[in-house]
Length: 484
Picture 1 (cartoon, rainbow, N blue to C red):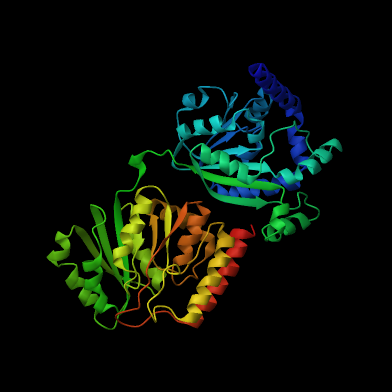
Picture 2 (picture 1 turned 45 degrees about the horizontal axis):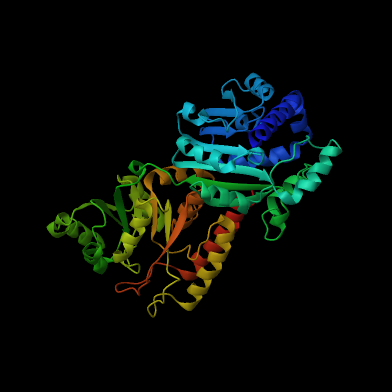
């Protein structure tokens, strides 16, 4: 009996969208305010030139707007697929029921992004369908599920009756937590949730203003029409996990810490490259670096060692020069002041080498600190910034300013491309990496470290001038990352 019901449901869905196919572009034009905002946000999530699969693609309007290097759209409606093929000739389209048993096996390729937009509520068995997607995912694939907020459903139904919106069939109503739960039970991990579009009309530019600056605000965001859940597959091939690491040690006037850095750094994996990047010191740091990297004690420890002198100024300049020189899978920053103990680096490695995280940020604000390790005003500022950036980035940060950060080199390379519009105003490099990880929707995990007082030299941080720059970064991040 249930099989007959399922079959009738499929036939009803197919017939409904077949009947709407000829008018679909007209409905999109009529609701252009909504679709403009929806596509705009999808373009923020998906870089041009990505490989994309859209499940429930309709007439191809969304996937066609994203300019994929390779695009594949699947829809149950033959008439919708006809419209899609006619308009988007450089994208492949398949008429098929996505709950068909062997469909995903037949596709036999991996995608960078898989979109399920306004489709999930029509599925008969959501979990089983999601489980099939693992065959199409690699370790970096992101699943994006876009859907209407259940809060808006009565309003949208009323708008459809007034012919202000395309009519829809009744479907399963799901909020973002329901979808995250379904993803979790299908071995996907939610990386981020977003709410967008508080005013789905253009109305002489007012819609863009409200959607950019008000839909992201706390409380008001709960009134948004659109919810997006971004997740990753946890069924990745172990061969895709990283096996080597480049440890970057920026150092300026840190002569007394150079030897200790190598002596205390554990051999946490078989293939470790250590890169010292020296920043025009006045205490003989460069001479000490050249001496230490030739020491057979550390060569026998299994480290491959390199050293360069910084061409410009600031920690960001030093770190990014070393990143370009690095040749291993994972980039690890270990500040030359050793306030983050080298002995803690294996904790970071464990998170990224097992696939538990894709970007790891240290946090100094969990364990008690040694006296003088961090001044009280710095501690308060860090707490404030952590609250702001948790809101701005959609993932929980307790300490954005901890210098120890870990990211795969391939993700850093992508971050360079996606962050081109951010400018060059971050003297530390911390926020360039954090913003890049956020824009790439990487899974972030924090590792608590026991922050130590400096044993040699003096801090390179100008607390007030750099603090002002950090305030500028918060404002900049709001306009670039949140109010989009």
